[in-house]
Image (cartoon, rainbow, N blue to C red; front, side, top):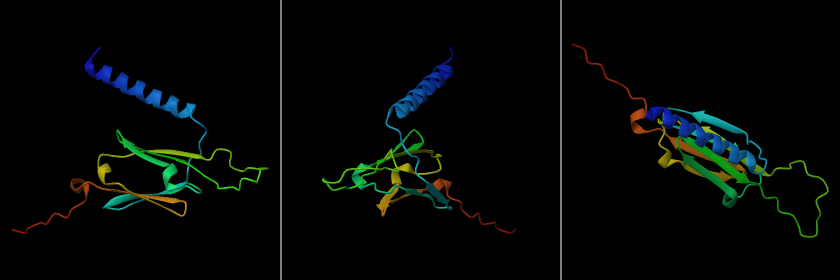
Length: 135
């Protein structure tokens, strides 16, 4: 078996294990996300109602951005839940990120239940104007 086949099989096995681990965890909701892109960066706005910053986990690894969060709904100790619309207060979403973006400079801000992630483009990936000289 060639080295490239072995590497491909290892990567496929790794991805399958990651998917199985995610499914084994608690059920999760996929948050709604708006994505805006311009020549300088890509911005993601994710709806994460009830999620405090300490229950938010954002990771970048191997060209993948993952968002995991747990919603916390404060209730009084003397109240008992009689009906719940949301049974899984966990959020999970994963995105692929191209090499055009500089993941070491991601900025994250959580305000009023909306996560704003800004991922800047690498300088060499930004469009640039080429000046043409006549003659």
